[in-house]
Amino acid sequence: MPDGSIFKRCGCRHPLTHKPYGNDCPKLRRTNGAWSSDHGGWAYQIELPRTAEGHRRILRRAGLPTRRAAADELDHARALLALTRGDRRRRTELADVLQDVVRARRPLPDVDRLRQRLRGDGPLAEAATVAEYLTDWLTHLKVDTNTRRGYESITRVHLIPHLGEVPLDKLRTSHVRQMFTAIERRNAEILAARTSPDPTARWAVRGIRTTGASTRQRIRACLRKAINDALADELIVGSNPAALVKVPGTRPLPIVWEDERVRHWRTTGEVPGPIMVWTDTQVADFLDHAATLDPDLHPLWHYMAYRGPRRGEACGLRDSEVRLDRRETTINNQIATHGYTLVQKPPKSRAGTRDIALDDDTVKVLATYKARRAQWRLAAGPTWPDTGLFFVRPDGRPWHPTGVTQRFRRLIHKTGLPPIRLHDLRHSAATFALHAGVDIKVLSEQLGHSTTTLTRDTYQSVSKAMRHEAADAVAAMIRNRRRPTA
Image 1 (tube, rainbow, N blue to C red):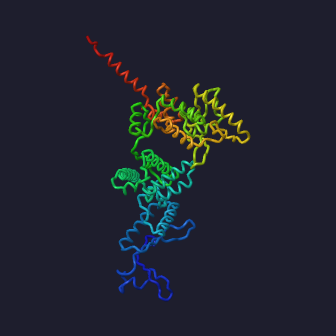
Image 2: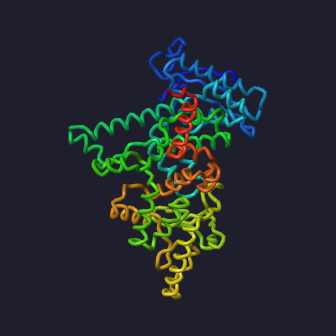
């Protein structure tokens, strides 16, 4: 039976022994010996390469509707086995795969795809679906807790619903594009429902958010990371389809709260964009108010507004990394939140670990705060907790980043300043540095960016000084070439 055979079999059982007849049922053949046309189903079988232990085995599939279907699948099995002729190890592996496929009642592997796997020396078994792979990938992924939560959320909400049923090795750029098209279509449906005259439609999307441009970028990044890991583990071969897809949407750029925009906001309540930057006067006003109304957090906010560290980096600044006599601090720690639990950890990237030089004003503010903190510690006595942090609450405990943000918002509302996010103090610090003529490389290192590209793309659009200098230079050039008037 090396080339295989085709036959019929049924589910009838012997009336006395109740054992299945298989292909020996008397109803399967006519009196002339031909196969019956109205009883049983078609089947085929072919001898497979021996097991690794040397045992013989048969590949058999029954229940096929026609002889043609059985013949076609038998030819399919022969073509697959022919691909591994002369390679004993791969023939044994292929036989294992074929047996597993038939037992699971799945189709035989595609000949071209199997040939590709053989060429890449990858595993011959059918690839898991995207859902199966992502579930296992998340289980073994070695990342921090917050990153894991982000990946798990993206996988659950977006990747598995849209791509989960696709076999991993069949995932193509078209599938990824279709996912983002569906996400944009859903965004349009949500926005249309919000403005619908039908209250039922508005209620149906109450509390449902659209998937913004930054989230779409994170979806693509998560999928790209997962597939890169599959390629590295040789689970699949080829290119990464997520890397070949352009995700619509651009990073929002900072907008300065100019006087005209502030007046429009006071009249209409409309904020021009998601990232707003205070002017130097507005920052100064805020810090003056903070020194009076929230003196406990004023030094931390001053540090952020002047030197631009991230919120977690400011909250996690170590006391041992503040050298006021040398006018510098070192960022090598941050406070992150896992749920509401505080976790101290190093900066996420190598560029995040950096020295930040201090100006005289900031040194004075931090020195005054340090003396005040010493009074707090003296009053607390032995109950003072030794956190090793520079910025702490009056009882010595760390500042919770969420609490710092909430108090920042309340103070802005109380002072009547135009709204910004706490993170936008960092944008203000970057904008002021560019206005002051700080080199883009120096600024990039101060902010902890890995390259100057992000710094340039994000902040040079709001550097008015550069734009004014360019406008004056063009006007001067034209003016020098004009003929003098009589």
